[in-house]
Image (cartoon, helix red, strand yellow):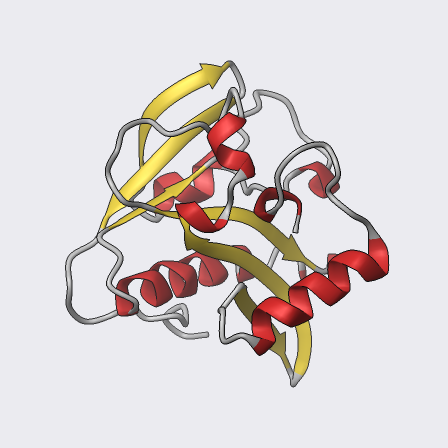
Length: 165
């Protein structure tokens, strides 16, 4: 909920849970959930940029231009399933979902660190993951935080499964 709110009061705990439930109850798709063997183990938050008012004032994530974009602002992958390519599959699913909703441009704000970074600090995702998915850097306002984009064409979604898996 952090980027969906404005000002310094971003709420915590049950307040944010109630706000998220209200969004979902209103029909807003706030993100996608990834499952392994029927258990939820991953999450990606995405939507039209205007759904995230806090991005407008961010020194790193402020708009690059006036083009309408969908923003990917948060990833979570449970520790028990990290290293299995689930984040890459969630990114493909996010791109496919945005395309299915009419998006023609998807933007994200990954971490591009030279040294190994604590996985818990990687909730924006690694730049290398976006590079593999065809995103291109369009701005860099902080050394380790590029803004990346991928243009989308209407059509067939990319497969979510890896070949052979």
